[in-house]
Length: 527
Image 1 (cartoon, rainbow, N blue to C red):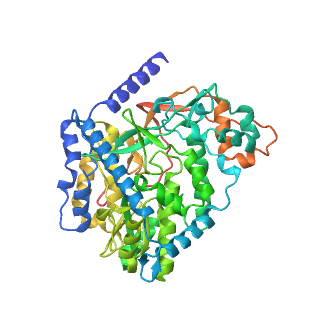
Image 2: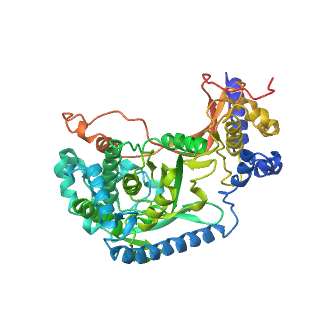
Image 3: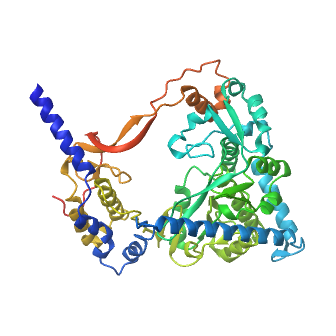
């Protein structure tokens, strides 16, 4: 028995060592130069070659600081644009023809009515949101789980302070248990950056805790109300399918905006939203941002990181596009998912014109109104063919990086039925790369994962990330669940002891026996 245990332990040690070992230089180079091995000439291959390294972030010393500096400079330039635009927007002549025979004042009235119908009445129920799992002004990313924010210290801005009483009035259970050892009043959100591509990072903001709780309530409300008007912000596949239709027959155009969330101007929000809604959203947003110690009062209404930014921008873009369609007499599809906008192609330039008149900047590289190509919500289509590329975002160093690239290459091969026959060199490349993956980790079925190679069912093991239990507040976990379902939970007579799975956090990689139930697609010429 001791000998068996000793052999098993020795085998596991070898597995652990292998899984965490760095890839050889030759394999890393194969992954970096993957597109070079494909024969060009077709759009799908040429497009993959142009996109594969477009989001690559190398670990060159000092490059992170350069990307962050570039991102902050862009953010400040966007703020200058917002301030100058706000002055011009407020001086717009109401009689100005924003569309042929359509005065600006008439356009605004229709858009206001649509926004008001979507939002509905502002009731106290809207204050019940939840926390996010991201960092806040009081907590770093390492200790930012949702449940922990229901206890201990919490940050809040002065303008949001009165809504604590509203929360307690609407949800008595929260009044009983939603207590903080201390509320700390803060002035600003805090700007930070996240990787975007090799040249620049993306700016976002850490919000005060209670502000985020209230913002999430607004976001949840707008998301729910938009569904009544045919806009489902829980499903990106709608935009992807419409983009495919647009690439096939040219009936639909796709629009993408540059720095969309950062160009939502206070003046535009104040103009389009009912006053009571504007005042509430204005109270719970962070009106200033801490940029490396400099407090900036923003002309943008909300940035990435705010709990209602995504839903608010979707609402505004839908209202503007729908109003444009009404006055132009267009009956085609309008579909909005954040700043991914789909409109009828016949008036593509008109839609862009309207967006520009409200301070938004179309991204010419990612907006398409003519030709056979369309892109929306991560779906890329050329004459109806799915040409969605995959990306190498960081230097490939470990086995999981190799498996990820192999699985993405396989998905690209089978995105269209004939692609594996048209590009046998890609099949050979997949084989060359997969040969470096131990056979015990073959047999996966999900190309989104990097823990098991999607292939014939040869292995019975998969990589898993080693998890360690994280201490958290059971009360906080219950309150988080309650806020997600509060309108039902509040009627549940005192049942405050539900069972939850343990909270865990990821660190290392190890292997364990996988599930034998799976499906797979066989590669061309496989024996």
